[in-house]
Length: 299
Image 1 (cartoon, rainbow, N blue to C red):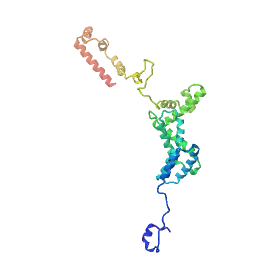
Image 2 (cartoon, one colour; image 1 turned 135 degrees about the horizontal axis):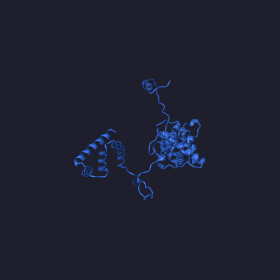
Image 3 (cartoon, rainbow, N blue to C red; image 1 turned 30 degrees about the vertical axis):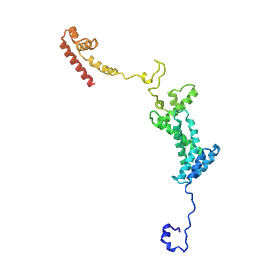
Image 4 (cartoon, one colour; image 1 turned 60 degrees about the horizontal axis):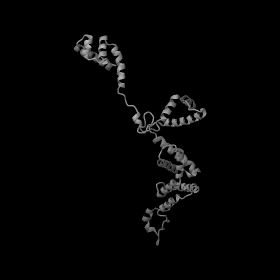
């Protein structure tokens, strides 16, 4: 049975004469200097040796306790040793306008996840496991942070599916496919295809200050060539609503309205033409306009 320190303290009287405790085995005080030196040497490792060294460090990492200094140094060494995998994965996204340094950091996050999840006992090469993890992290970055307008994930995936279908059909038909052809090829409705095509427009946007080109009046910002809101459009709805109300007025009141607002005659001129006093014309206009306002309010 194992003897604890409490047992030794309470049973000190039982110790034989000349008893001396056995010193504990010697342990290194801190493995950090050794690992720090190793991390410095990783930059000079030849690519041919990187795979073997990665395998050794992964086995060593699996036997360490997470959170210790040695664990952190081995993990950091693995990240530095395998950053070339991140740069290799970044080549697949060369068409994107993302900052390379930002993309390198995103890929490094994927590399760290691959290191943490890798199990050396499965007998799988680390490269085979790490590349899909890094690519998945970069794709997730593009999906969640690079869209100018947020759209549902379903539409983001539909956009990629449509892009592949467009390339395949364009190669087969030697022309751009129609919406109906895309829908038949993907076994989707035309409404779903149109929704996915519209979602693609939300991926990137341009500033209104970007130069619009030198056609149609010379260079200038795009904002300067966009139309503004026409306040007179609101009058169209009022005129359409007024047509049946005016048609229902007596003929004399319609004539007074026409002379006043179409021919721009004064009340005195209208009275002289119709044989009415200016006061009578004023009362006719006031009564007619009140009736029209009430009709618009009730419409």
